[in-house]
Image 1 (cartoon, one colour):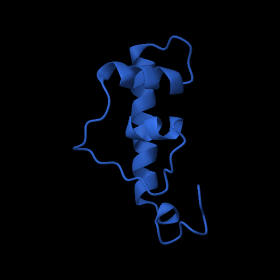
Image 2: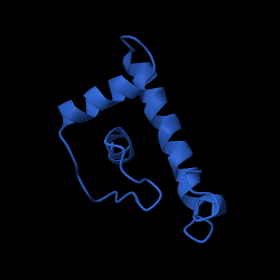
Image 3: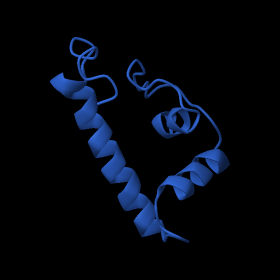
Image 4: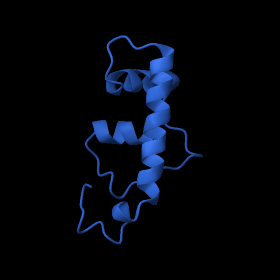
Amino acid sequence: YQYLSRYKREEDLDNFHFIPERTEGTEKECLKLLLEFCGRHNPSWTELSNFTHFLNFQLSKCETSVFCSPAVGRDFQGF
């Protein structure tokens, strides 16, 4: 939710780091955002679950990638 809401507001994601302890938004706002970004019209709960698991996996990999680190951020801005 934190990444998707910042992406929707066109905020800089290069300097944003996920904080698991921080609660943002409501359940209703989260579901609305997931439905918007899922890419499926009227998705099932299974499709939403698969989308969130895949997105979480990809974002976790991105957070630990050397290519997305602040050290190379100037060279790969927006990568």
